[in-house]
Amino acid sequence: MSDCLNIAVVGAGRTGEHVVAQINQQVNSPDSNVELGAVFDQHNPVSVSGLANADVAIVFVPPTVMSEVVPILLEAGVDVICGTTGYDWPADFAEQVSARTSRWVIAHNFSLGMNLVRRCLNILGQSATLYGEPEFAIEEIHHTNKLDAPSGTAISWQQWLNQDCDINSIREGDVKGIHQLSIDTEFEHISLRHEAKDRALFAQGAVWAAIELLQQSPDAGLVAFSTLVDRKILTSS
Image 1 (cartoon, rainbow, N blue to C red):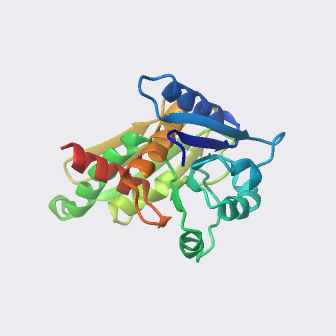
Image 2 (image 1 turned 135 degrees about the horizontal axis):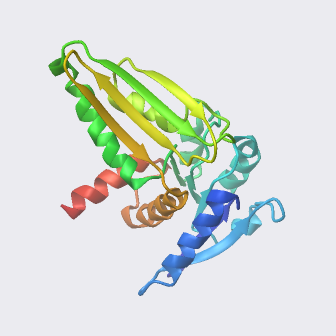
């Protein structure tokens, strides 16, 4: 690896454009050790040779494209930050990644703030016995072009809460992403809401993950985005 972290970008859609902008912002910052590598889109398909100089690839492509991209990324042996949702990952994918001695961070949502929400949901779920018999409900709203429902993030909320909880999915306009948990008890209503104001936040988190993956140097295999965040919080406290 060179002195600079070479980041390739796979997918130049709405989020991919923000990824390129975030990398360029890093490049222009003082004492930067990041450089923008190859950018792959429908006019410049991703290839093993094209990834030769990349240390890590950030991937935001539709789930229908992932089946074509995954074998190429695995063969290239590059580290990967992947934000594609709705893709059916093979059951043995972790073993495939480890066999290539690469590291993949796959996340439904690269919002750093969402990881603060994760911690809150853990506490609310673990403390459910305080409420008597609470009713939990999650509502998620996204733009009309989002294919998967419920969203991967909403499913993560359900898992982080670890309680019986229905999910209501709404698709309207160009909503970047709104998730809300409602808790109803006999005498109280509690709500927790997260709203994505700009798709740039997902790109920001993905670039942050790419840099942290280099600095934290976890073992080969699948690495949880939450693990990178928690380690950063622990080392910073």
